[in-house]
Amino acid sequence: MWFRRSLRYRVALAFAFFGGAVSLVLAGGLYLASHNLEAHLIDDTLTAELDEFIAHQEHNPVSPPPATAAIRGYRRALGAAPVNIPTKVAALRPGRYHIVLGDAAYRVAVADHGGVRYYLLYKLTQLKRVERYFVIVLGSAVLIMALVSAAGGLWLAGRVISPVTELVHRVRRLRPDDVEADLARGFPEDEVGELARAFERYLDRLQAFIERERSFTADVSHELRTPLAIMNGATEVMLQDPRLDDRLRARVERLARAGREMSELTSALLVLAREEVEGVKPASECDVEEVLNDTVTVHRYLLEGKPVALDMAVNARPTLPADRAVLSIVLGNLVRNAFSYTEQGSVRIELDPEQVTVRDTGIGIDQGDLVQIFDRYYRGASSKGAGIGLALVKRICDRYGWHITIDSAEGQGATVRLSFDARGGRGARAREPVGAQPVGLS
Image (cartoon, rainbow, N blue to C red):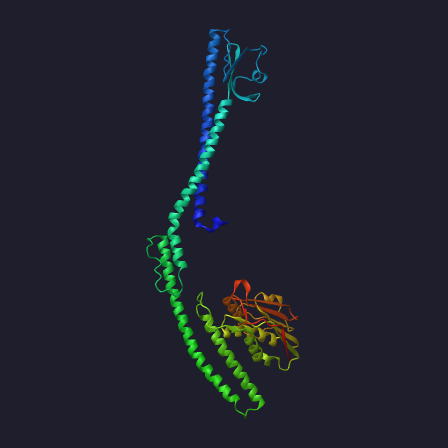
């Protein structure tokens, strides 16, 4: 609920509960004390009135018993039959009693004196009315006290939590590369100030880590790209040599493909290593169909010698605000897995406006492996890789707001869907509407 998300309102609720509980206890104590005091006062009044009743009767035996709006008296000789005395009253022995006659409650005092039994009744109706009014007053006081406690708690919580709120605002505006955060400025030497200083120390460590990451990224960019460029250049020169026979040419082509894949992988990892800045768009749009065609061409050698039919259907030509190298890594993993684990049957690749679907009739994936298939270094029983490819794909999808699902069963092939518009991510845009363009490859 809403008050569970706000520390201020929870404090106010605690104040209201505490104030109401204390008020309820005090009100209960006052009620019990008042009730006991009333009982003692009534008994004392009855005793005094009864003594006066007996004294009047002794002085003037023919004087009538008291009969007022609040007090009624009766008498009878011991052993004589009661006359004009209510049955309930006549049956009472000496003592103090609480009885109800009709719809009225009475406090009764009974005493024997000089062979005569005296009865004195005190009507409690008016007292009960006052008691109900007193209970209403106490209940209203408890409610008012709870409301006042809630209002006071809300005000006090606002004053107490305001430093925490200010710290939250400062931390929320922070970015990891902010050099001068100055979080603790203006906070006193208390718990909130210590928390702000702890945040500053943590931010210093985070900035040092980011600086090391940037240095590493720059080193990787320089140290890996140079030898890869040399290797790619060497393979291009070797492929132009007419003296290469078919067997050597195939090996050099594989080296060239590996070099290009390594270059793209390095570029993709460098893109992922950079801190994403909100509101900054990629330098260019990426043509999904072009990347998909290149990916299929690069990995087509994995189907050589296999009785596998490759079918590709282009139903749209979307573009994505993403780096080409990153998309190439994702599609390359999906296509390479389909080609590698399909020994016979078919592989169908469909390009739609908002997704790419890869279906194969390969060995499939066990249901137990599907749960952990995107975990880094996880390898299923039939896996041929190192357990990094799909984990990297998942990381890229999370970064760009894409969504990937895999439906499979062991021995029944797999269906992989890469959606570009899932859960509010940056979706694809169609360059031009086109009809389905099936391309059959063998």
